[in-house]
Image (cartoon, rainbow, N blue to C red; front, side, top):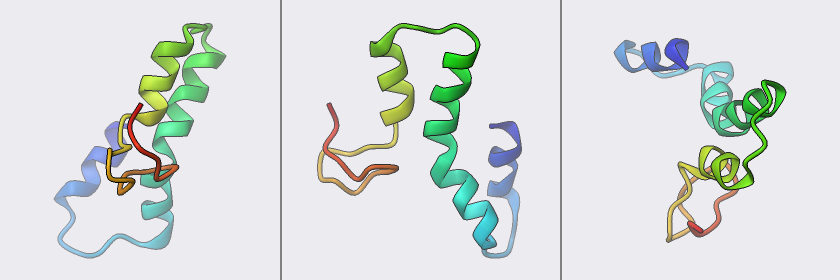
Length: 66
């Protein structure tokens, strides 16, 4: 995530690979937690869905917040 946060300082548009990394960080973070033994589904849901919005404008799934 630290690497992705550094993208905020760029003064140019993000390339496709950078945009994809940002879009995938929610799912990737939840997967990393699972790999390290996290088994609490409510916590994993929070991590995976933390950019979802009630109006479906969020990501990665564009679904209303739970």
